[in-house]
Image 1: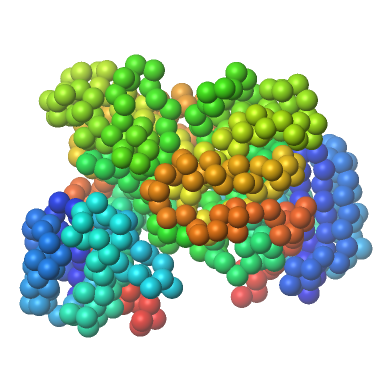
Image 2: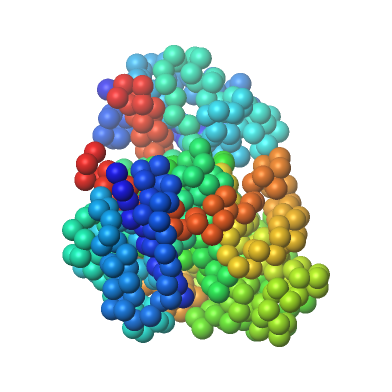
Length: 291
Length: 291
């Protein structure tokens, strides 16, 4: 059995084929251009394989409501060429296979719970802190969605008392993404995160916001594992800071796992969480039709 | 088929028996005293019925992890007589029937999705604003829990600029419960909510905090229906205020349901959400053993 995965990002697309255990056999990536150009690259790659199904983990917002007329569309993205683009249908019509569809972060959560750092559990949360902030979750073995897919990057946080930066979110100004994304960090300090690795005040403020987010996610979802990916999280000094700030914020109210360094962790699949998850989205779409 | 339900509250216990469609046949309530006294009342009530299973929706925190040694216990509650009390086991040993077990708010969410305001959906959130604040959720037909049960009442909120009240939470001072519970409202204004019904500034501040909570719940969980119960929510003037503040806070970022007054609503079962949910917890426990 061969499954195709598409990690559809705003900057780049990754395509892969893998077997039913999720192991990648071949993988390519290319820059995200117009839908026509990009999808031609995608379909050319898959044309040389006989995949049984395809999974798409996409940038968003996307329509994940199967009863909606625009199910399978990328919807109101600021990338105007991709607005209202029927990505799921495009793949279905070209390849004539079932197509699974979810957000990029849900796909990464599915990858991590299937083969990565949350393997063997039935619940986890995957958060990315990079160009944007987002998170996806698996609850009792299923991708979490409801009215729509979560948009966990835009929750409100309290400002750090030493933070004078106004915030970068065009909708909420100083929500989590507005204060703690990679671009917000760069705008606050005038340099990229990698150039600020030794400046403790930079990571104090960053960790304060991420710890607040984790507090909200824990109190609302109670995930069994928290996986932090994305470019900003390559600054590994953030992990102990986030852990200690989380302990302070929770202040003994709920019992935290004995070892927070085994609970709040880096992706087990490195940069492949999303693409591996997309292969499992394909497998789920196939199994839904062939129970 | 006959199922028993126990709504175990910090102030009062409600016990009922109902049929497999959740309709209550008989219901009693009594004040919560010591575990021995209270459970004697509970078991006396059930001794006259031949129930096939019992469900308990309990005040907490409780241990909902089936692989834990203290599964089925009320754990670190401030009600000292009830600390580390094995409520689930007590009922099992006395009645020799399967016992379902969850939090009071999860039970209420289950009641509302089974027979109440969220009937027919596979997802909802039930929030109570009263002596305390808590919320439970159903996700894809299942009660939401993970590492433990959610504790959604203690999420952080931003203070209202006109609010001088310091907050009542012994753990977090000015978290949601610390600022917006019934006792917090009474401490802020020196009067009970019912005596303040016509003072707009009271409900402005209250609605601001509840709307923030709903924003976080929506961005993280995306429930298909939001049900607001508890004593404070008897002040119906809160509903339109919460709706308009939520629209302001979200600021167009996610698509809200066309009619917020059909989305953010009062319990369909009135005060019976929790006890009806407990009957469905019993039914689930029974069906797990007799699939």
